[in-house]
Image (cartoon, rainbow, N blue to C red; front, side, top):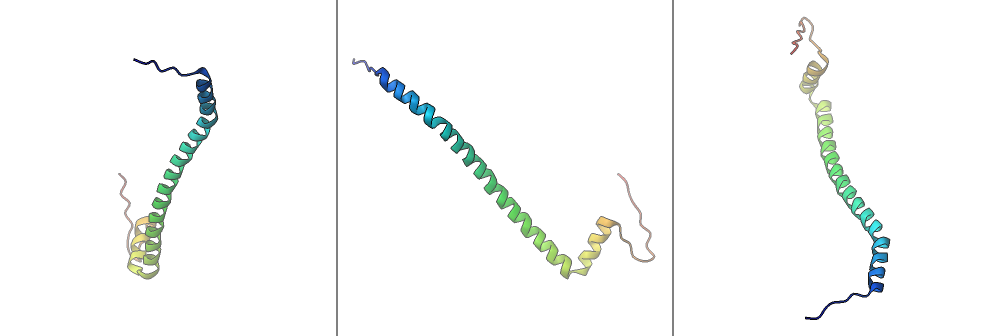
Length: 88
């Protein structure tokens, strides 16, 4: 069987290349991961934006929905009604 001999100058060149390119590769991987996260965040925010747009449209057009939101979130009552707060 033949023995494989690697000359020391090739090891030195390989080590130098590793030292030169490894930090750049690591930075590239970090940026790729951040890019994936940001793309996911963009998709999530676009869905939320559509949801808020639909709610805005509904609040502008549906007075029954406006009344429901006012009653639920602010405790608004009609004239003659008595508000009852239930604590849990």
